[in-house]
Length: 404
Image 1 (cartoon, rainbow, N blue to C red):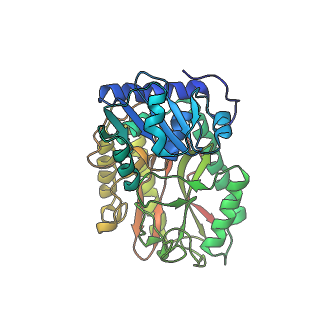
Image 2 (image 1 turned 90 degrees about the vertical axis):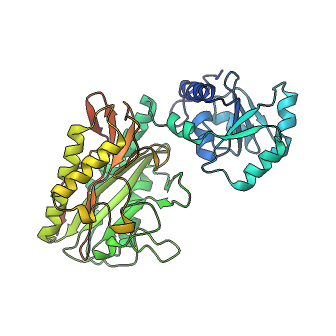
Image 3 (image 1 turned 90 degrees about the horizontal axis):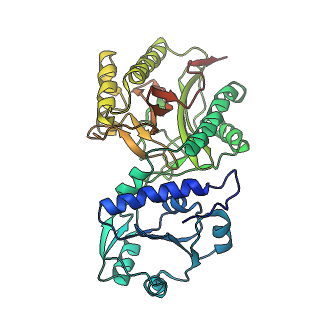
């Protein structure tokens, strides 16, 4: 049971939390989980409404219990859960559960895709008779379908990116470095409530707002799993904007995430200072054609794998297969990815992702070509899948903007 105590606005509604808990508890029953411990900030937030340090204990037929190590007053203010109790140390958890007349589960689900090994070993010691299982795919599947409340937050994030594109002509000028332009863009977004940090689930995947890339330097692959890379500020953060000065007539890609109340959209738009080479505009038009093809064909029931192959076939037909989404070992193994509270959510638009796409899934689709010696050229939008097909949440004009 949850109580309707959260004020409107930024707090997650109690009805939202209740629906999410029902979804994961049903999955736990279907997959034989008697209990679960959620440690990751985002997972705890999704199912409780607060990110205060602690652990969320779930059972299929019982009320969730949120154990908080500190800031319990803030946790009680932010969360609509009824059972929020202090926990000094994880070592106290088994005894605390017994004191609450809760039998220790025989099977315990954990976020094994991201849980530190040290924490896993500690749980193994604390619950020696319990079988520890991976709950991560169920957690991620639970978050694939977005509620109307989540979609509204995504629309607000998309409004940020639309406003950003409208502001670029007043922010972009000759002799700026990529970093200087990035600072102006990020300041614009920050003034509109952007949280700054972009959360990802993948190990060693890091994102700060997004990427500003220009010219041939923008073709450099980076350590993140993305078609875009860039020089960055050096080996310690070798992605995105760097110290390079923007040059006339070269493509400038602004691939930035909007973020409202934790919810992320992903958008790319193209610019140049002076007319770019004709080959750049031709490649951009080709990527728009790939996007339009996918928009026409994608409906509930289509798989992410099918979308990927359609996009690759279209890029091949248009003459860009060799450098579509990168090339060789640096080629991104997808053309789109789910978004929500994390940038790398499910579904994937990728080979072997043969789950059917469902209504109210939200994902970014980003057909891009990496042209050696020229730059990165492409488009990216975040789409909501409806019964009628794809609705673009990101609504900024898609024309290649040539600025003087």
